[in-house]
Image (cartoon, rainbow, N blue to C red; front, side, top):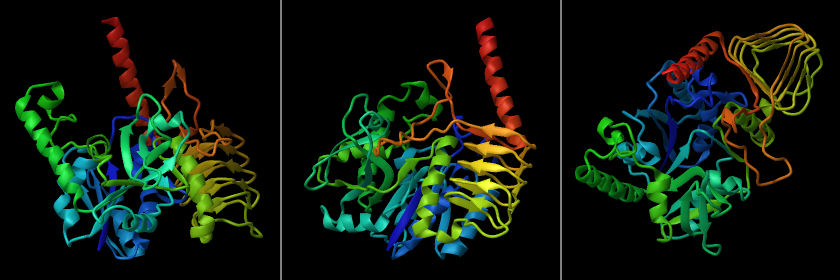
Amino acid sequence: MLKSVILIGGPQKGTRFRPLSFEVPKPLFPVAGVPMLQHHVEECAKVPNMKEILLIGFYQPNEELTRFMCSAQQEFKISIRYLQEYAALGTGGGIYHFRDQILSGGPEAFFIMNADVCSEFPLPEMLNFQKEHGEPSSFVILGTTANRKQSMNYGCIVENQQTNEVLHYVEKPSTFVSDIINCGIYLFTPEIFQHIGAVFQKNQQDMLLYPYEGDEQTNGNGWHRAEAIRLEQDIFTALAGQGKLYVYKTPAIWSQIKSAGSAIYASRLYLNQYHKTHPERLATNKEGGPRISGNVYIHPTANIDPTAVLGPNVSIGTGVTIGAGVRVRESIILHGATLQDHSCVLNCIVGWDSTIGKWARVEGTPSDPNPNDPYAKIDSETLFRDGKLTPSITILGDLLSDHLLFLSFQREHLHSVSWKIA
């Protein structure tokens, strides 16, 4: 028996996905026409003998998450449960806290995957790889190749090229270590909890020895909390070179989804993959329909004028209205949005129930990887770089999201002004 665990995180203070994360939890944001999480769930459900999918995070239970789980259970005929952390416990702390739930029923192995990755999810291949390499209780990391400079933004893996054993692991090194990077998808056996438990006991001992060291321990919100354990730094670094940890390298698509710009890039990857997995999701040119150029997803409830031109890389959500002569390219149009006649939308995410007026042109700057480098990855965007606003895609949130974002900016700005006056 097998299980899968998807780490969905929780509401963060970071602003990279705002204002989109104001409306729905980030893991439920639609990418290529379906919630981000659905791509994970769908691939997990295809694995033979997969009995259950567990979502672990510290979001408060909400209507959107409940609705998604109910719908996914019915569609993919598999049990899906949400386990809520009492606080952010890290990639290792969360699964250790719920180890009894994961081990219930006696799974021989289980997958762990981060929600904010776009991938083909080669899960059966990882299972076969585990059987062929190392001991039955060995652990597998999914890896891919990045270019030399960008590799330092990820967990870097040094492997034995003959056996694929992980000899050395460093999370986001300051100098070049390896061009093989961690994809955030793992295959573990129950023995992993022995290693996580050893780190937990060490953290407890450290807290007893140094109970007042640092503000984080006294307020209980930092990494010094005994249960806050990171797989990457605390587990993989220690396991490397012990004959327990192996890397399965995939040449297939992979990308992080950390920002809104990376969501458009991930949508492009998934839409292209639909030719093999879901050709029925791709729109085609039909008499009386809009002109389709490249890969486009259109929800059946969308109302689109036949003179509109869509694509490439366009995703149209539920209840969207698109008028005459509209041009849309490299964009995601969300539920209930209206694009009035002859408007032009390029490199944008148009938020829920937003309206773009007649003849308006809304254009962002694409944040794609270098197309001339086959190993290039999308860069993690920061709002400012070298004191300048980083060019990026354009985002229109819904009215409530825009209002919240304005208040957040206003609060931060006023705090900065008061600090300077003081």
